[in-house]
Length: 441
Image 1: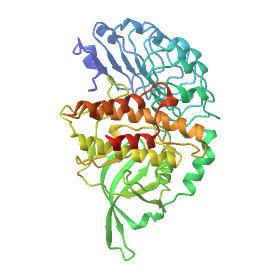
Image 2: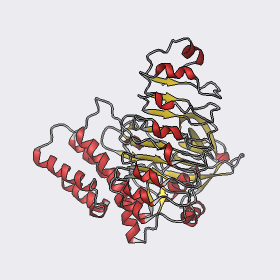
Image 3: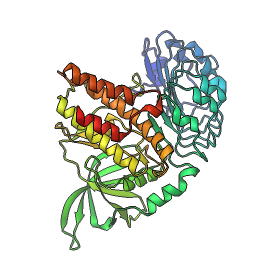
Image 4: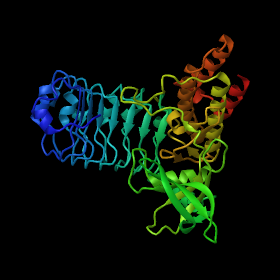
């Protein structure tokens, strides 16, 4: 969304606008925004100095989406609950300590409160029946309201980097939960420390790396092309180096992403980790990974504001049946491998999968990964079956992009998708089962 200026707004140059983004050091809500009452649907006031919104904000009767991240709000504004059309609310990286029940809009679908100081949520959050996406990483939550057990449409939950002593049992039974991140809470601290300190990969001295061009940057870190140097200083091989940032992300803590990458081990459908960086002059954490062939690209784009929890594919993306099956088998195999090692990926999405167009796929981005006890069969299977639902969504998307499938084979595909997406969590197949059924298709 293009950023507009206050001068444009005041001059009437934005009349009829459906979207408005203002980032100009605002300390007060510009009343001129109400001139857009009949049209405004998306309002982004992120990156200002606002600590309050006007009580008559509900006059913006068509407002569906409101962002106010990176402002000094200390409370989620109560009048949001009176905004009849508001379904997406984002107040990331504020100073919010209190979330009043009256601040929750009736049509709430997507709530982002990442990186605040919230220690309790109102019981009424469990009454927001349309809630699909709830992002609460980087707060001070010690418990979750039991009323949340009634959130039957909740698909994505981020509760990493809080103060939870345990996960409630009802959480593992939510019928549509598919993407869960809970790393960085006290109940998992010992397991996470062990993962960081006992990594099954070698240390690589920072001084044996020569950084080159930046290949990409995400919320958790920056990836560079690099060259490993021999002892005599001559170049040896090209690699990728990821240097992690320190700040909390929407998914959790970068250090715990690194821990999951280290513990994931080797698998043909995971990006190989070659080592952990030591001796960085600024004590930054980082990994050395295999350099991926440029023929690989993202399978899809991330969810949009409209799709909420589902990835967005280019209109012309189609797969032959053998290639779709090979992608599915590869990712199912990688997910099985991770769960055998006590890791839930937490973000098993097409936009986190690289593929070469020939069927070879690589599952990446461990920013939402969490550890569980692989030796505890009850909880391990519950976590696996949450991830199986995410895989079911991926499988459904692949099936929609396969042309010319015979009726009997389509039925086999559809049956597997339905089982993966079952709202009865305990009846979903394991990744072992899934691989057997995919091999039979």
